Image (cartoon, rainbow, N blue to C red):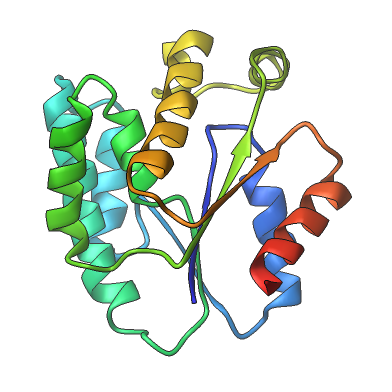
Length: 188
């Protein structure tokens, strides 16, 4: 199975991934962007704001996605793969690009390597505001609350448009409650 764990920054993905690593020690854990040799360089460029246009930034992420799809997903067809983010984020964060265009470009980058299941940890605007105020923000997070809420809404739209098998979980629940929802979804 190929599972993507999605959510905007501070939604709690890292915490849940740590729990999943304990439960599934033989699973292959990966992430986007940056899980490949090329991806490390592309991630650094994107997060440090080296791309001056939304299109340039999107192509950095698409290059990473194509490499990740080829090197990680397609080369491990018999593994349980759990990814911290994936193409849903890629489409959502490229929110200035028309949805249809972003989906088409991501389909090229994925080359058929779609997830079997998607989990989206969803934050309310109030909870996001609280969580962001408690940390130093990177280039993407510094774009603001409304930007990130728009990204989250676009994630939900991508899931709907592509009719992906997905579970949306309220990220303000306790860590244990979120863990239980994830386990039930993985197990069915």
